[in-house]
Length: 318
Length: 254
Image 1: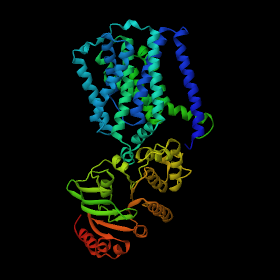
Image 2 (image 1 turned 45 degrees about the vertical axis):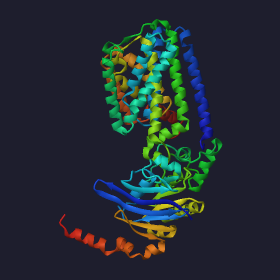
Image 3 (image 1 turned 30 degrees about the vertical axis):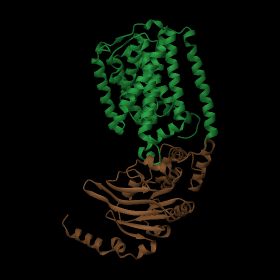
Image 4 (image 1 turned 90 degrees about the vertical axis):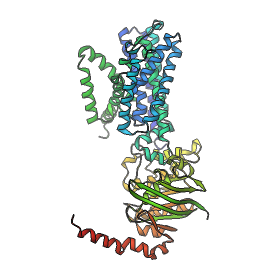
């Protein structure tokens, strides 16, 4: 590529940062951090996973979905019910990802016939429909939810590593996709779907593929969450506000980038923790304000803001 | 020269309006086939149907004997038919290089081996006069280069037939001459070109044969000389009917 030398140097730095971060996170359970801090990190990893997953569809491919709670919930319920059925979490949690991916195909086949805002609106409808169905199905325990029977089998460190593993997987998958011909085609679809088709890209097929990939990652995160919290209910994992949160984080962080969703998820988790404790009614207002500010002044999100500041500090450019 | 593309009875309605009616023509291998006509004559509609961006209401489109009417564009591209757009539609958030790369990786009848993609893209950028622009954002290109990028992206799909929709529209005479010489070189290298254009001089200088459309129907077809002398064509472009039409409109109260 024309810009190869520069990007190679940048990606070497990025590798180093990622490796260091991973080592630091691996060491966390051993350095005597409070259980509460570990729990906060664990939650953050799950949100990092959903953010990166949503970003593949919403950021890279430009298909804004308000329905990712469906995949989070499907993953959570599949894992939860499987674990209750005596299946090991190591199989139950991936099964959650598989069921979510399958669900994404059923949802994608009709909704990807729609474009832009119409697709977004359709996903809101799907989300609500699934939530209501799950609230009324007997095998899912209806509105009262599912209590996981063998949840005690994992120590907190194990739960933590599971979440860290899933987040790392999401990061690796995102990186691979964004640096592959597949990712190139997804970006072309975001820019101009018809022009992309005119040069041979199959928008419908690729949208289904990336939707399934994102749903799978989100479902796995849901599975880890279910196993950790040991109690799930439709108004939690399937709720519209879960979908909105999953969407908000990558938007706040910076769409279409790799660091943006990670930053967005971290900010969201920490702010959420502090705000919910101190201002239970107030925290949504803060997100609203943050979202408006970002849309007004920095469409690139926090990652874009960081890039701009870094450029200015280095003394070059605007 | 063998027949490459044959269109028969091609028709497209938009609601009650017939944009293209019972269109019939054949394109031979290695020719530049011009399509001209007044605004709204159905040129782009016909193009879109051949390229697969628009479903025909009726009719047949045969490419090398194979019926392709109604195929979606991504399939048509893989047979070797690729279009450019009248108003350039670059992937604005991507670099010029990446724009071309999309065409090469997804539209190609064969994708070049791993190590050769970059070289091939550079070659196409150079051919279309975009070398040095590879790393620029496609959204930052001026009009002339956007037109070149349309051409480059389409060429990356390794087309047999190239559909150029007003590729010189909005360009200055020097730029136009450049693009026209590119089209001729492409034809000489074996690519068949269907070429919609408003600029009469450009068409007459470049095309081997020309078809004239008016109100969605074929008015005439022939070499540039034959078209220039055709009574019907002269009338459609300059003649009485359009003048009288305008005069009548003026008399009517608004």
